[in-house]
Length: 248
Ligand code: PEP
Picture 1 (cartoon, rainbow, N blue to C red):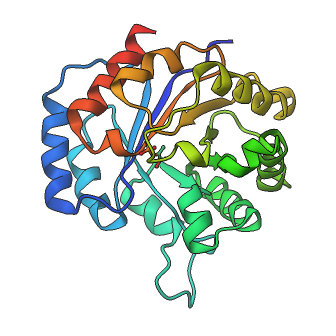
Picture 2 (tube, helix red, strand yellow):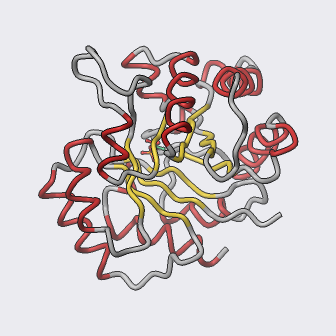
């Protein structure tokens, strides 16, 4: 089963409109061929319009880092997925560990958001992963399986629209990367818990992916791409990671 590689750049709370424009101008000067890879960048909400406008004639897609599960209403400060669709957003990241840790995102919230996103035609990357303590206690497998089951309750696993990002929390923004063989083992487990569609669903890795370690991770059979935080903020390292995909 050939799964198309998926690369996402999660910019977190970095880059307003001006810096987004600078990044994209550099990205567009690169001749890296992404015709057979799905690549998106996920800037902060306020930088989405400029990103979408500047990437409109390219193969790069734009994603959001979060959304609300309702389409509209009295939800001060939230962003509707309808507004994201209207802008031209194609991907949305759900359940990132920073949202779970700092903003109280729950499995139930991820499930509700997933349902709405699918109904509205957004593609989704669902983030799952264990803390360092959970890994030490031998609970990594149990945690990711719970996150998957809870997110998918009542939803069809549509491989065209849903991807999972295995992001061990201890590896995010820390410079510590999971060993490729450990990541591969977790990806195999994740795929195995996705039922009969498992072979078709993309399971990407996130956690301190950098140009120097990307290729070895991406060479693993069950690693179908990467969700990149820090290294996606620099267009040069982001492009280098895409080039690593091309070598795999
Ligand atoms: C992320 O934010 O999803 C991430 C993986 O961050 P980093 O690459 O900086 O570890």
